[in-house]
Amino acid sequence: MPVINSIAALHDEMAEWRHDIHAHPEIAFEEVRTAGIVADKLRSWGIEVHTGIAKTGVVGVLKGRSDNGRAIGLRADMDALPMTEQTGLPYQSTNPGRFHGCGHDGHTTMLLGAARYLAETRNFEGTVHFIFQPGEEGGGGGKIMVEEGLFDRFACDEVYALHNWPQLPVGTIGIKSGPAMAATDTFTAVIRGHGGHAAMPHMTVDPVVIGAQIVTAWQSLVSRTTDPVKSAVVSVTQFHAGSAFNVIPGQVDLCGTVRTFESAVRDRVRDGMIRIAEGIATGFGGRAEVDYIEGYPATVNPPEYADVAAAVAQSVVGVGKVERDLEPVMGGEDFSYMLNERPGAYVFVGQAGGPNACSVHNPHYDFNDEILPIGASLLASFAEHRLR
Ligand code: NI
Image (cartoon, rainbow, N blue to C red; front, side, top):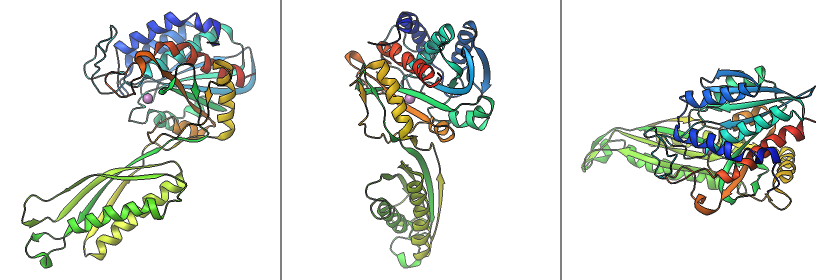
């Protein structure tokens, strides 16, 4: 593998760091031990360290051989999932109900590996910011870091991040131009009618009938108000009402999720859901209130920077090993908040093969140590290529 030689030499050491973090997983904003390890290692390599950003976030600042006024941010997520590991590995989680089931232990390790290499070589001009964020798996640690002035305190011209990807083979890197991951919104709705005897519907305003029409009508937002070549999902996942065979209830409670890639599509779906629910309910003599909660925005790679990332990736894994023709993913990612502030790219590092074919968020999943030097080389190469 044409990774950076001195990073390849760190492979065993990086695997040890990874197994230690894996054995001691911490969920959103509880990453105290993990953040402590990150800060200690960065300091030991002569990197300036800032802690306590978004509670447990850490930023390392490293200057190159000279200052050309440019800076980039490299970001890794540190948090684990609130689930139980079932791998039986020797370095299995020692924290009950906590599990690095998405490979963020590997992401943290790869960024540490890149930091150590760059601190030793400093073969770049300008500044690298190593951004270790808490709470990616819900909690929006990336958003909070941005709100706490991440880019005011640590100016970055560009930002890059990666995720291990079990759908791509080891030795490949996937980079999607444009929308890569979806905006993940949720909603609740309350439909109020007027309950009564089920045999005397004319004495009631039946919220079940109103709710059923709203659920059906919302689906037309995808088929009739969204551009057919664009994507939206509206899924009602809960519909709660009533307690008897012969009583029309007074209220229906709904909830669900909306997934989109473009803010204009997202806005139209949200506005349409509220308009349709209120209009239908009013038309039947009831009332509807929709509470639409915006989650992570879509993760969008500007085409120019997707090309930049692809060129850097090619220098690491070689020609023909960079997959550009990926389908976007309907899952969410809170690096989107950073990409909304600064240009850059979010890339997938292939990790499939051998025992590591399992998907993320599965209790049998494990990050593949084979790709530690690839990811660390990629992150270091972003600095060396973009800061010269
Ligand atoms: Ni993840």
